Picture (cartoon, rainbow, N blue to C red):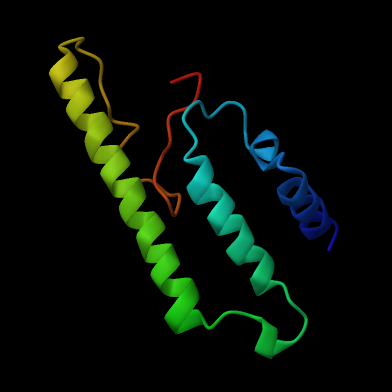
Amino acid sequence: MGLTHHVEKAIDAGTFAQMLDITVKDWPVEEALGYAKLALKCTEMRRRDRPDLATVVLPELNRLRNLGHAYEARMSAVGTNSGSGESNDQVSGSSPTAGGSWRTAES
């Protein structure tokens, strides 16, 4: 309950982006904000106030997964085209995270 309160306050104050991990240098902030708003709806106490899993939550998760795959494909293409010889193994479809592996400041 405390986390939802902090997220709601940050959204209302327009400071949500400040809550995101600063080591990730290219957050899709609008998508993260939309996902946070959906997550807040999922925490409602009454069932009728929560979004439907099949018609609301799952399509959004699929959209975000596709966004992650598109990002990974772009980053792989940039790495291949850059000729730098760097390996992009960390940006692969086998990532253990749901949305893929976003580049961090260290990568």
